[in-house]
Length: 263
Image (cartoon, rainbow, N blue to C red; front, side):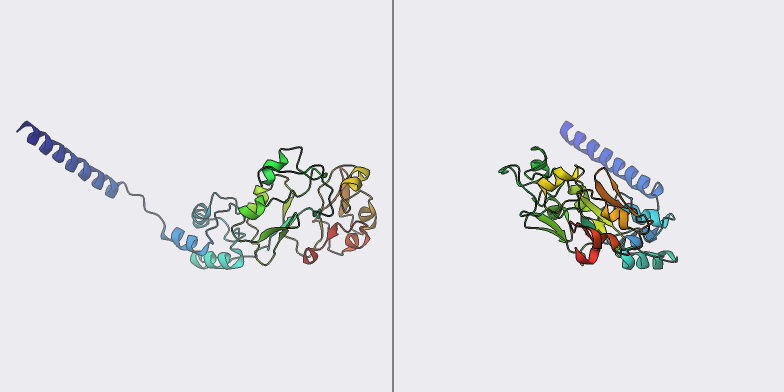
């Protein structure tokens, strides 16, 4: 009898508690703007953070609250136009952004300082004296970037990462995965890139890599706009000044400066 009473009391208490929760859920419910779900449906779902928000859901909420609709790099113009249609605003211009690997030191080009036989990971290899290659700034070639790319847009060939611009959405996942920090996001498709990150003096770079920037300054001296400067022994381009004339590409004796179409 005592057990039966206890069971009944527990059941009654449970039912009362459930009732209270139901009422609380009903009266304390926070209504979500239905446009958030509609905008999120226009986004690619990559959750890459390239827009500056934690993921697609956060960005969709931000758009409804007034953020620009054209910040989704992977979604591009299609995502911007879809979100703009939901919000009833102008989509604006959407920049085309692609990842660029700032290195041309493939296996036969960059010398090795030792044979690495550890875990097949760029990050792990980088912890061993900067990696197996003589150049401590270049691509290590074990494909951390390839594993991180959700779109299959980057792959390692002959010890060097290559980006397929047709597949690249500019999400930046490969950039985050690269321990060498030599993958850059490039939005100026008609302007050149210096595909080297070696900050050592030219004589040292020349011993390590047959095509690395040797800071000869020919590019700097021949640029009519003063858009390229040698800084810390490597050439760098000011894209606000660069007109894409290609003069630096022509005069570089190491052929380490290239236009995106020639990557």
